[in-house]
Length: 446
Ligand SMILES: Cc1ncc(COP(=O)(O)O)c(C=O)c1O
Image (tube, rainbow, N blue to C red; front, side, top):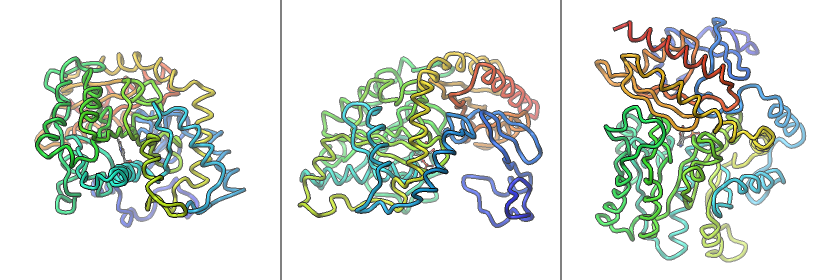
């Protein structure tokens, strides 16, 4: 292949070891995306796909946004890199101020990372540093939740709860992590929005605090809506109850908003949507519309002050950071994204589209191979009935849907649907029609 022409199939697919992919399957029948514009993708066979998951939930503003491309280009022409340790540039401060305007409560201190995984890792470390600065160095335990996804570093993997992601690496996971039960109950089948039952599952944290000693627990981390496992919407009152238990035991509460952040629920953050303020919050993905990697941790002012004031003047207060923490190109993309959020009132747009999307999603209920459907805001999960081994039905359905012209992410036997916020009703209709075609084609395979 000519090196500049990235639209042809390369001579060899062998060397690139693809992440979270069945490499054997892919290399026999590749799906190479060659173009992306608005809510559409084109593949190497010239087929058009509607993007029903906003990439990996990271392109809510659609693809090929000129404003972002121009901002990045301009930034790179003037200042391509600044080392982020003991130096800085104006943009990252401007962005932090903008982000802090959207975060709930006083989560006004903004730490930049490279991606969602490093945001989670950073949040865990900040919790430890905070407790240590208060003389509570014994608080080393973290509480995660079954079916959680927080990314793939060791810390993030340890607090995560998706079995395939942890079982190979069990021997190297972080010590001291305990998991609460997930919130998906059998009676939550085909429930649109928040289930009425299950709030008491938050009491798992209370039990863990009693069993392991609350004085040893640093923080509890949850995704307000569990995304990657297939959109598990929190039962009514669950997050509020978690907050109360954290307060009772002086445990910090981290909301991982890497998917739910920046409008996915119809509010800027799920924390605001559900009226529960955590102590720390992570974000990534939509922060730059997925175009340049960037992660963010928003932290309560008291936590920042405690850590900063625990060190003498002139000393680094937190020995943590990344070469690519808040680099100019990521900041330029994020600032352009902030402008679009504001100009296009984008969170409201997502909120207004939600009921149309959820009605469309739940209209698929009659297809016989569908086990369950869930959804909130512009996030949905469709469980396909299991076949002879876990994940097979989901993957085959994903491929049939791809053939039908709709692209999304499947995890195990769940199809995760998360349309771009700029979708119009006609795009939602197209996604739902093509999902029906693809899922029906899978059900005929059996
Ligand atoms: C809730 C959540 N946290 C963390 C991550 C990890 O993000 P990244 O893949 O950018 O490291 C993800 C990725 O999907 C996520 O959904």
